[in-house]
Length: 74
Image (cartoon, rainbow, N blue to C red; front, side, top):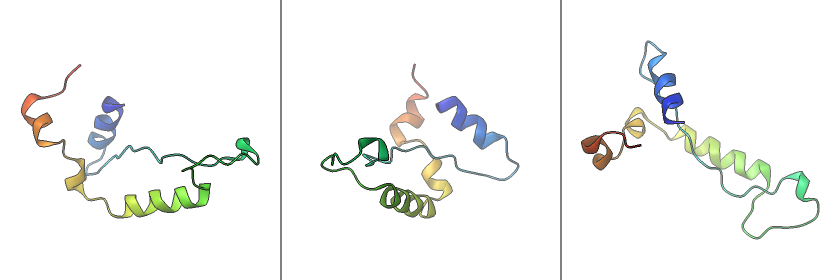
């Protein structure tokens, strides 16, 4: 995934950000009537993701300070 993100941010002429994040537990239709504690309806999950994306800046694309010093691991 890191290579995909790096590639996506270098394919554009202008600076860009390619965030990846987990939306958390989503109460999907395949669960039927079974309610899972802590899971949210899809519309709420999407609203939260849109809010998160709308608040991102290019600064959010920078690796944490420790990762910048050490470079990629793996």
